[in-house]
Length: 296
Image (cartoon, rainbow, N blue to C red; front, side, top):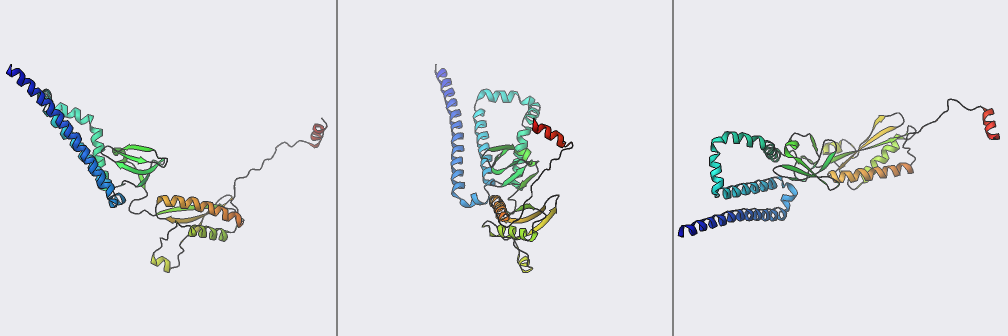
């Protein structure tokens, strides 16, 4: 009888121990999450500079906590321990199976480590890839990168794909952005007047910055450069170089200046040509036919 109660007491203690380990695992993960959130959000310098390393370390520690916690709980289950021991003879085959099954997951983790180490992009960077995907890097975890596009949608891409992708990073080493303002004018319009208008509109915009060096200023290089780019079939293309502090300001600068240049061109008589078509008839109706149709 005493043995019966002792067996049930041991089973009860085992269940309590397992649940305690699982509860402690979730509790430790929750404490780490709250502590990390307070640290990052309370440190403005971290959020401003680069929170990539901190977030990646957070995901790594969270994964380790769950792996160690659940592994420790499973070790206390006699049945699972017995199964593990009985499968020890086939450990080589099991390792091969697990290796193939987790190849993609491990590839994503290793690619994520390389991304954090070499930093081709960081959190809050504006990137574009595959000529159609553009947005801001919102998060980099152990498995994938999350990009928020400009429609506030999330694009989730595995790290192994991102590490092999050719991408454009607008914030890599230097945030300054140059936008090309290109306008076509008619051959009858005055190029000098059009150039002056474009220079003034770009120069006077509050988001336009001066990127000249002291030597450039001493040499008399203008703050805004406008050049004739090409002579087309029906237009002369002029290009202006407009510099802004970062990508968001550059977009606003390009939109505003394009509109203001169009309005200035209309006021000062600079014509922007547009396609026109001339229709001709191969068989013109004779005057007699036209007269008969009018009589009817």
